[in-house]
Image 1 (cartoon, rainbow, N blue to C red):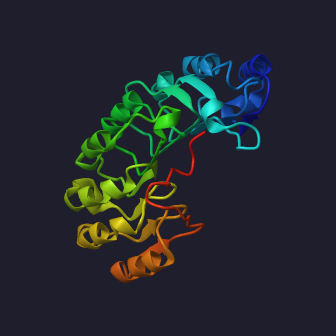
Image 2 (cartoon, helix red, strand yellow):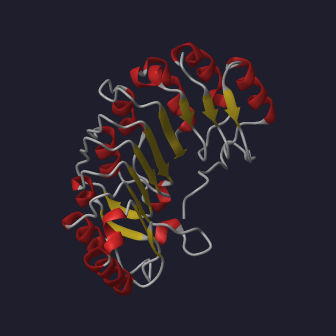
Length: 271
């Protein structure tokens, strides 16, 4: 793994040096890019362009935005144009973690794992994800986020994704950090994509006990489900117990549940 953490130009220079001169570069399988000096003032565009222009031959995993909240708020971190990443044919695992980025048109024949982590997903990025051409994808996590931090994606952009029938090996779907989590659940009943899922992740958002009747109705539409994650939502202890009854053969994960009135609920990750 090549992991960069600070200093934008030095990081690019270091990668270029390793890639061009060091014999071990041919074995490089994972690259993780973190803080680029001043997160709110510089993007990762030049690093992404360098990677896409001359990718390591064995590169399988790429993380853009490898940092934690103690280092930087997610909404402050600018990644920039991610679109060149989809041209790297060897990639199998991609994580994008930040507050300002453009995914572009997503098409990749071999990508198996994709996580988009943000405090506010733009409408354009949500549309890109809903129509992404990823026939080998097995794991998809999307954080939708807070409208106050650029999250103008809505349930309308999720619906086309749920109707997909051309993601044949997808077994994990995360609709996470969503302010419309309760409204999402009734749509799962007729969601063709859900019938193949083994894992459904609704964590980090505003999900509450209000959604439990819809989830009860949805249980039969999830015949293969093995794991349901509602952690860091507003489901109550009673709601958690009810979910365990509704899904008796499913691992229901409900860690760090939050409390809040109906008018005082928010996603776990915004700023």
